Length: 191
Image 1 (cartoon, rainbow, N blue to C red):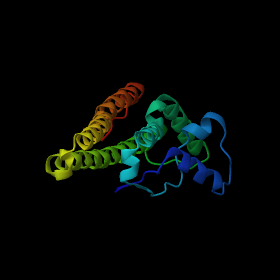
Image 2: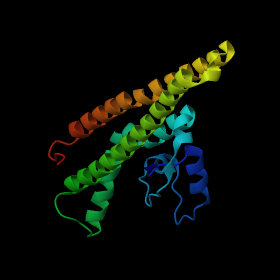
Image 3: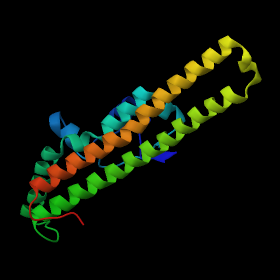
Image 4: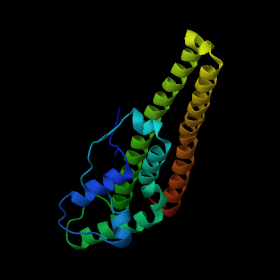
């Protein structure tokens, strides 16, 4: 099982709605704010097999990358405010903000990669099991049964291709975020 992943975005929204809040974030702040208390939840095989849930989950986890410019500006402002309040950390405000956001980005990338790799394994195994069943099942001699198994295999192969495509999407998202991040920050370089 892959950790750090909500079963579905609607499940996450319901859980967040029920959780006690000290301050309610509204508007773009609510959407772009980092999760203050990450919860460990699990992705299981049914999540991987349900493409709509899987893709919704990936979209939720890509929000940080999608709004990277806004997050860079907000994080810098947040660290500038800390500096004004006398809570300055080590290094310049810009460097602290960059390091914080970079760490957040990389952690998010690792979680997504873990989810995708887990789901790739799940759908690959399921496709292989169907392929073996078609070859070994003596009852599959019935033409109708063979058609049904082949249709299931085709559906499974389509699902497998879509989950595998998420690896390519992930690479594109990472490259775009990295380019925006390094293009917007001239003095600090990721370690």
